[in-house]
Length: 91
Image (cartoon, rainbow, N blue to C red; front, side):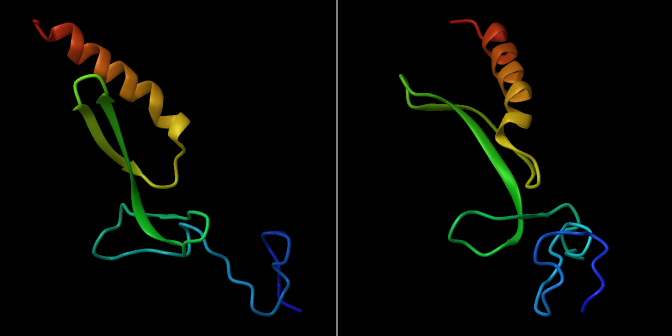
C-alpha cells in the first residue's frame, strides 16, 4: 500500500497521483496554476475574467488571475474597478 500523507479518498490506490500546484510547475511560466473543467484534462492555466456592457456590446474590463481561484473570489475587485472606471468616464 502507498504512503498516504494527504489522506485523500482513493490516494492509497496504486495508480493514484497527487495533482496540485505543489507538485506541478512550469519553469517557463511559474505563475500558471492547475485548473480543471468537467470533461477536460487538468492543465496549467490562468483565470480570465471580463465585464461586458451588453447593451452596447463593449468589453469594459478584462483581467487575468491565478487559475486556482474561484469566480467569486475575483468578482469584488472586478466590480470595483469597473465602477471606478465608469465614475471617471464623462459621457
